[in-house]
Length: 338
Image (cartoon, rainbow, N blue to C red):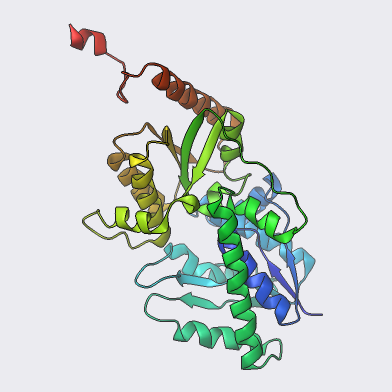
């Protein structure tokens, strides 16, 4: 049976059910790399240039692990756009070329180009081209892809309930797995970030799990009403042309106006161009809720993150008790009042 390897990085957290269902329906066996660990990050650092962001380095670590498994193909799409007139980070466009240059012993890549910025005609041509690798006719290929889209909708149902993409994939793959009760603490914190950073426990240093452990209910981008997010993002004078950036910005504005949200945390990766801009815009536009920007890279330690999260949660609790306390720093407030 033909084996297709899918690395646990980048858009794995958004599209894994789609491609696993697609390849399985075409008669292939899907294998994945193991969960991200320190070794994954270290190997990825060796095989990428220093200018790459942490998620790209992690992705290369997963590719290197899959090479050791020797599948017949490795799924490494060339992502340009997943919706009309919006785009993904430019680094995603060069992923297949970067892999071939850095890892010459890599098995053949399924480097399908996903570009929906204008229409989906080229996407369908590439999908049929991939189907031909498995000797499937056009009808079977179309049916397999549509089945994959249905699997993706099942994942979206779980994420709207408050599960992270990582948790939703685990539930989707293990049908008999009992759904865990989401923590409902005394604080409700909106958590934002690119899914391939935020939902990978090793990359995010378990940020969401740590917030839950501190008695916080984490509200994620996927659980925000889609129409409200788009309407909020449209308030910005210039359209945000990064798909994920626009959704994070719109979600931040929705959370900023929500009475249920006590504070907002944004996870950014050092070296990420979109994060450097979107994080700054969110910090400027969020005016009604305490906001904290957390920047991480491969050198970040858990101790610093835990200290910042604990201090942030303490501040939110103090603010709830002292109703009149503002979001501004208390430094110099007494001198000003006199």
